[in-house]
Amino acid sequence: MSELHTSTESILVHLVRPGMGVRDYHLARGATLADLLHQSKSVTTDQTVLVDGLPPEESLPLREGVVVTIVPQPGNSSETEPWKGTVPAFRDEALFEEYSEILKARRSEDTTEEGQGG
Amino acid sequence: MIILDTDALGHLQKKDPVGKLILDRLEDSADREIRITLITAFEMLAGATALIDRRKRDRRDLISAFRLLQDLVEYLGTWRGLILPFDPASEQIYESLPARLRQELKDDARISAITLAQNALVWTCNVTDYDRVPGLIVVRAETGQRATSTREADET
Image 1 (cartoon, rainbow over the protein chains, first blue to last red):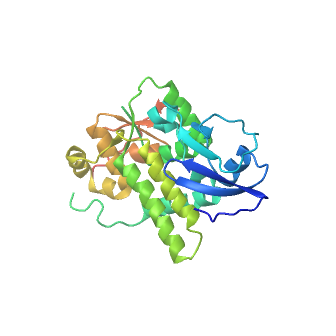
Image 2 (spheres, each protein chain N blue to C red):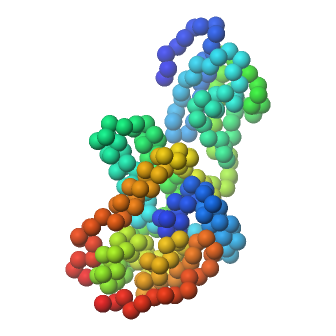
Image 3 (cartoon, helix red, strand yellow):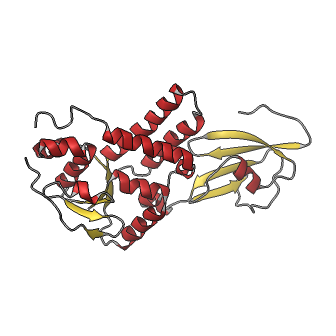
């Protein structure tokens, strides 16, 4: 959890995401839901976003102490058809390149035990 | 049953142009039994942990590397119940493959063995390697078409 601030220039917002628990964000007063999603790098594809339990407008300014929750949409396609899902970290091209390079290197490694005894 | 290999799944995960083609072909397919194998899960997670190890060694950004591992773990969770094991039947088929093929195909040989054990089709972008496995039905993932066999006598 982030340290609490009492500044009147910022507001404290709680963000709840599956697998990540609750995280607190300090945003400038007047910040919108879109600002929070951008700052928290939240991915909302196939997800439902709720503000204090209600569907919001992205342009609506957030208020002090609000709880923003991101939950999977019930029965969304990626639950029943997982091949439609994506890996958000793969959007980081440099990271993806490095990961792909490691996968290729692992595949070309000379694993001497492979195929032995057959 | 369709089994997506590691490479095909990687394109789908990134939803790059090839991944979009594969997704369209899957949408068109009458076969709705779509699976991956534990070998693919192993390769993906091993790649992510190797990335973390490399960055630890090089004292580079670990946050994004761990985030990648977390995203992969969560992604694999969406496949719960649809990940085929490397079981005794697969092991038996794997052991029956020519030694040279096992050495060259490595984990792709295990994916092939699982596919044969399940009487399934393997969907891949890497047709050339899989097509060397005797009896395996290989589908080019980008087109959804069965690969034209160029299989050689690879049983030495």
